[in-house]
Length: 252
Image 1 (spheres, rainbow, N blue to C red):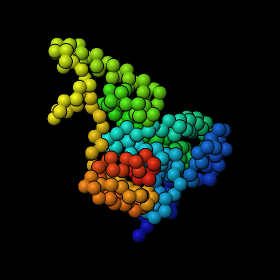
Image 2 (image 1 turned 120 degrees about the vertical axis):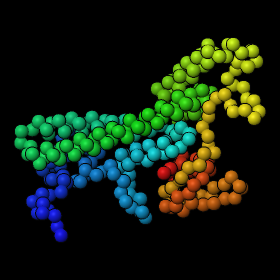
Image 3 (image 1 turned 180 degrees about the horizontal axis):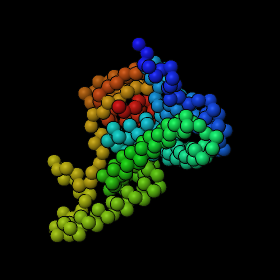
Image 4 (image 1 turned 90 degrees about the vertical axis):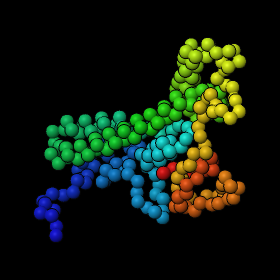
């Protein structure tokens, strides 16, 4: 039985009047606005992978970063595009809100757009915080590993190096200077003892979901296996790391 308000109240979808005006707003043509305000939400397509929107790409990189024990390559260009888009959208919303010809219904739809903007901001903040946590946790490892430098932005690398120097100075002043000279180094590697410098644990198991048919990968027991498109496997991170960096799998 239909709800009593079905005939009187349309579902909260963008009407043509608001969409036409939003699309004609200045400098806002690099991210088309969807008619149902769901452009950033992943489409439920189990068999066919639709072309990702910038927000969908961000969500994928965000989830990969959260689940991966290692620091993944940064997405500066993607973040820059999304931040520019948020700035433009916020400005356009303010213009439309101030328009005296806007109806109450259009103001409600503007609220939906603002909600979507806040959702994008939340994901961006969480993505940046996740990377910052890893950078500070593995600051010394990053500083002495040139390969890691390529994955960080200039600001991230400078922060990692500065943070590593502060931590080392603190350790020296608090503890190390009171130890015998041969035990003051943070770089020493003693057998059967945990390393002094924290590094990502690539043996940690992760759930990997194949976006395409993947080439064979070698498992810890020496056997090899293949992941078909759409398949999800639980495996040590180092087994699928190269597939993740190539965009052939995502972590879930």
